[in-house]
Each structure stands twice: as C-alpha cells, then as structure tokens.
Length: 497
Image 1 (tube, rainbow, N blue to C red):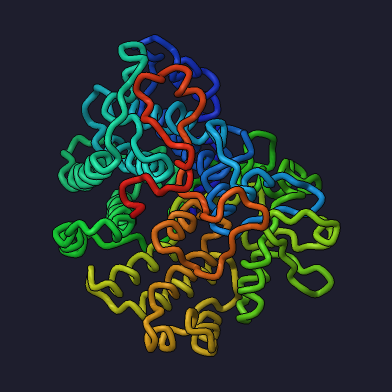
Image 2: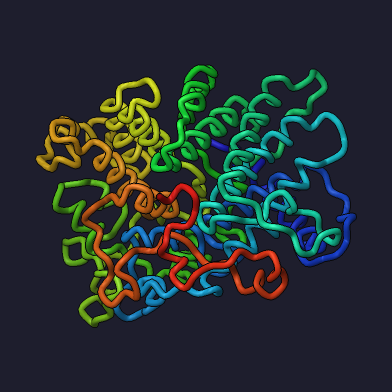
C-alpha cells in the first residue's frame, strides 16, 4: 500500500506544479526554455497525467479506457442518456476523441521528456522511469493511429511542423528504449539519487524493470500476426532474469474526495465529491448485455463486483439501442469492484493482464511456462482485483466447474480453444479497467468471437484505428499521412494484419 500522507503531499505538489507550468506543457508555445523544475517535481505530475489519459483525458470525460471498452463490446449506455451513441454507431471523424492525441503529447509525454532530458547528473532512475512511461504512451498512440510524431517530437519552437515516423520503426525504437531503461537501472552509479516522488511504484526500481519487461511482452504479442521472427526478443525476455510484474501497476498521487482531486475513473463514471451526485457519465455508463449475460450465464461471481443488481438480476444494455426499457433505473449500475471511492488507485496495467499475456505466449510456445497454470492464475488475479471473496478458491471453482470450452481450460485445451479462452478472460477482467487493451486484443485476434456489431452501426466491421485529429490537420497538414475514407476500419497500423 502506498503511504497516503506522502501521496497527499505529492498530490498538492504536482497540482501546484501543473498550475504554474502551463507554458512548459503547451505544445504550441514557441519557447525553447521551459520554466525551471526538477525531476522530483515533474515526475509525479507526469504520472498523474498518465492516469488521466487512461481514464479522463484532461477532464474531457473521455479516455483510452472508455473508447476501448465501447469498441470491445463491453461498455454501453442507458436508454435515457444517449451519451455514447456516436461511439456505438461507429461514427468516426477527425474530431473523434482528439484529446487522446493532443493531451498525451502536451501533458504526459512532454512531462516525461522533461525528466528524461534533464541535464543534471544523478537522475538515472528518474530518467529510466521516464523512458518506460514514454514507451507506454507512444505504444498506445501507435496502436491507435499508426504512423505518429516520434523522432521530431518535443522540439517546440525549433520545429513547429514535425515529421511523422513509420509505426513499425517506432515500435522497434521504443522497445529498445525499454531495454535502455532496464540497463540504466541495473548499471546506475553510486551517486544516483533514489526516487522519492514516484506515485506509481514507490521508487522500487526492480518493479520498474519488471514493468518494462511486461510492456515488452505486450508489444511482442501485438505483432503476432505480422509473420516477423521475434524469437530472439522472446528469448531475451525469459533469459534476462527480470521476470514480469507480480502486482498491479497503478497510480495514486493521493486522490481525495474533492473537486479536481478524485480518482479520474471514479470522477467520470462514479460520483462527484460527496458521493451522492453522479459524475458526468455516472448515469450513463453501463455494461453491455453481451458482457453481463456472458458472466451471468456462466455463474461468474465477478458480475456482482462489476455491477449492482436491479430487481435481483444483473441487467445490461444492447449497444446502440435506446429504449425506455433500458432507462438508467432499470439496468445495472457500476458496482463496488470498480466504483469504490474517490481515493481508489488508477490502474495502468493489471496483474491479471500480465498473467494472461504470459499464458498466451506460453501457449504459442514463445516463452517457457505452463499456459494452463498461468491462465488459471490470471483468473484468480482478476477475482482478487475486483474483490471477489476467497479469490483463489472462487476462481478455481468457476474455471473447473464450467462446461463452457472457452472458460474451462481442460475443455479448451481439448478442442484448440486455448487462445480464445485467454483473450475472453482478459476481456472480462479488463473490459471496464483496461478497455483499450481488450479493444486491441479484439483487433488482433477477433476474440471474443461472440461480440456482435451494434445495431445500426455505420460499419459491419468494428473500428481498429482513429483518424488524425483536426488540430494536426490544421497546423501540420504537410506532414500528416493521408488516410482513406475507411481508415478507421482498415487495420492500417502495421501489426493489424
């Protein structure tokens, strides 16, 4: 557990930093000499921005998590709200969620770049963390858009129209930066400063190496359909001796039940300060009937942690169906496993995801390990993450007693459904918490196979990409790559083959 008093102090520090350094964070500012700060001050601000991008992109009430959860067929909205009709209709243009692009660069990435390039010696640990988090965000942007600004980013007034880099080349570059970060941590000199303001992993540099290694595994599995031989990379993962994360990686700078200081997911989808008035999306965000019915049909106890019952039942909403029968008071609201308190952690990578990644890689004979054991451990981790009582025993009962061949490992193993079983469990575990990841899994595997296209959707194919934002077209049109009319559905990012 993080030290709450320390985190509260850090929260107040980073809010102060953010409020006094708008010039530093402004992508359009021409200054090449940002106001003076230090890695100690800038790192926690950057980490807070990381959580914001995943759950509330600069208070725009949208996020990577929300969009991914919708496109993965997990998130719907109540019949009397019509909050997410555009998303569920698959209507995508250059304004669609452009805050994800804009604020990833101007808030999170600029802040981490400041830490990484800080000129004073003794900050190797801080710089390694910044490299890891830059890789985290750059990978998400590549996944979302394809070619993006990378090598000419952060030059400010020296280059107001930066070039775009090839998406595969960026993946290779950030993968190598993860290796550089791992080595910086291992080889840091005696005068390297300890990290005292890390609100993600508390300055545990071994844990940061594990996180970097797990991000590398995620990136390698993204590329499973490219045909590229990545044997050397998988061998390096296993032979480095680092291992993978052994607990969920999350952010908590000291979230409070006060305006502007709440956990970003809770603030959007839960309640305003005081806990009685719904947040901006609180009356709208619901589970799809596909998601909820799959859990109830298979006696999954996680449904009671994800949702609240209505009349003794868990009721979802078909995506893009707006009918009084699905009014907000007639369908299940979000439950205590994800809406707990204003001060709850904001997750960046679930332990369950890390275990399912390892299970998939082992099942494909890309790493060593028992895929079935890793799969079962992933389910148990998901049960624990959502607060199911006696999670290990409950997960074992759920998995072993199921007759569904994409839940019971032995049944899945008998008919070749192992990969679908793994991806389906990631979909359940992360649909509301790591929505972007379950969307990307759906893109690369098309699992779960039973998720339907919403009624009335503009495409018979679910989206794979977003379009470059209007702001880029206006300010950097000479460099923005051309995109066809069907670009949001054509799987144009290099690994989407």
